[in-house]
Image 1 (cartoon, protein in one colour):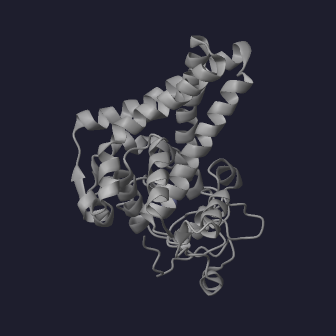
Image 2 (cartoon, rainbow, N blue to C red):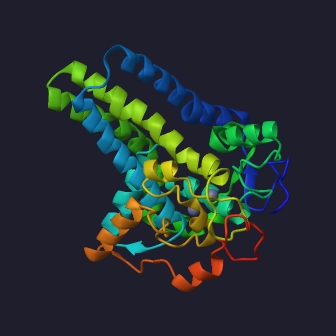
Length: 324
Ligand SMILES: [Zn+2]
Ligand SMILES: [Zn+2]
């Protein structure tokens, strides 16, 4: 196991400093507002629960956001696990944007850096950044979950990490239109609620549940991959990091919580490769492939899997090539 770093901000190639103003904006949008939404949701649930209309709207928005991140931002754009037709590529990128985790190229740049340095100095969000003792790990978990949005004084330079995405006119356009996607992420559920109920009250409650609360839940579910699935759980494959499989994270993220194989073979379109590991994102990619919309899908290679398989206790370092 590589030695933990106590300097999560260590300058590495392809990073640049960010201003306090920008870090504060990240803090408000990515940490504070979702917390307030969750507290408000608990208070609302306490009183009268959530109605079936809002539940349906929130569930649809949740599914679109999570698949957008998992299949679009992560497997398609960051790792190029498959190729697809232009309309689908655009649709998946827009769906990822609806999760409100930043423009696609920014997300992919941070994530490619995560893979290159996973759980080593240079990783933007390792739970092991502060050491292995109880308090250090607790601090690291908080850092990996949300803390790094504010504490990280260096961010990934897109020209270094995602030149392929910057060279794609569609991605550049969608990045520039990201504020419109953000607005749509709230207006869509609000409009659905208003039209369905035919009332302003229906519009506001759908905006709350399908917009605000859904965005908070999607964030915490996604961040759990960075925190929980690098700390707890099963490790059936040899990797240079501490990526692991956590069933409940996989359930909530539609397959992303099967994180150990993902670090063993980042370009693989399927993350849940062991028996019983349900991976709805891989199933969706398979559906796209069957429909003729996706091609060159990188399905698991049995030889690579056999070579990487290990016992959970056998966590030795491995000079593998787990690069994005
Ligand atoms: Zn990871
Ligand atoms: Zn990844």
